[in-house]
Length: 69
Image (cartoon, rainbow, N blue to C red):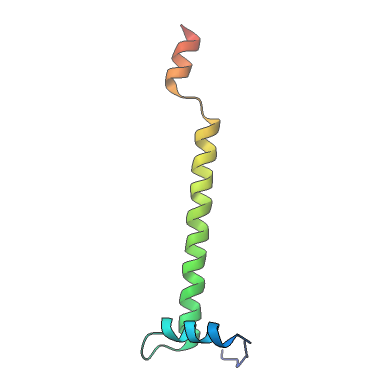
């Protein structure tokens, strides 16, 4: 499904997008790629936050051994 929409940008933003675009690549393809990369970074960040939270909440085996002795 194709829909022509306009996304207002500054001249500087348009130039930066144009520089990111590969020869033959459409702006739609570029934006889709950027969205996917953004989502992957968000997922990686969330996974890192969960790992760090788990580390903070878990008790190490050494701590458990010292409390049972």
